[in-house]
Length: 343
Image 1 (tube, one colour):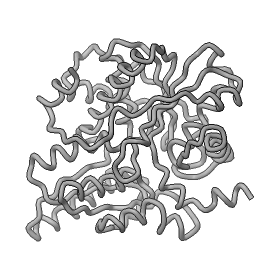
Image 2: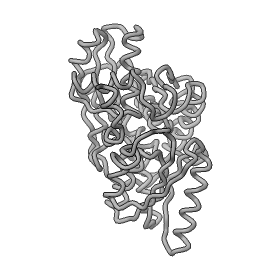
Image 3: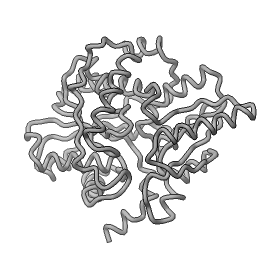
Image 4: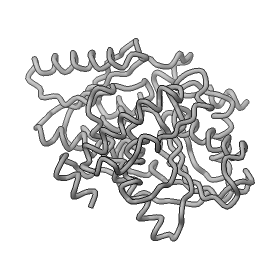
């Protein structure tokens, strides 16, 4: 039903390998002595090493194809997973890609600026632009417009994937689909999840997932672990995105309330993309108990949050908690300091 509703509103192309698996994390559950933990493997979506952004790109690239664009223009942090997957999606649909890499992280070695996702962007043949004011979303989008204008002057037809809050969150529709997908899988597996834990950054994954779950008729709490902003600021952003996504998806306006939005910034750390002791522990623990490879920016921070909530007593031992693995493993190769922190 969700696909029929959304297809009438927004063009979509098929890229992601879905449905992605849901797996138990039995070893990690035992190690923490807490609830029963599960993982939604959205690191297994396929395109260019996978990740959650492929779901969003199905709608952005759908619009680009429908508008006969020949170039994708996108902005993100230096080690952005979204940028990497957008470059791959552009190539898959025979488009060029111009990527703007924002200097968001005060990082201190060459691997961050040359390896990981940056290396893959170059492999994919993306044209790379650098942007120094990584904390200013509006300025980043303004510069994207300038890049697109220059491309138009050269005869190209760019499609821009904006970053800022003032542009429609079409990508959030991908996680409306994911929310319904999770509930269909839970029904097949005869599992009732008591909580879902997910990264909360741009807000599209968090808000889209919440809209999709509520459209499926479930009140499961969704806890967004803040990766870039404090909880109060992020709450405002996700609430706005939630209402916008509900409207874009053609869902009933009362299908989800802004009161559903929960965020936690306990594990935010000093800044976006900077390692903390909790993130380092989480990455190692997930790898050594479940063979799960997490990234330092999103999933490592979310796993640190999940571990912290278990230890804080937020769940009881009978609860079933689903961790949404949004991918991002290539970024690990830009963080040599992660290894140095362990030696």
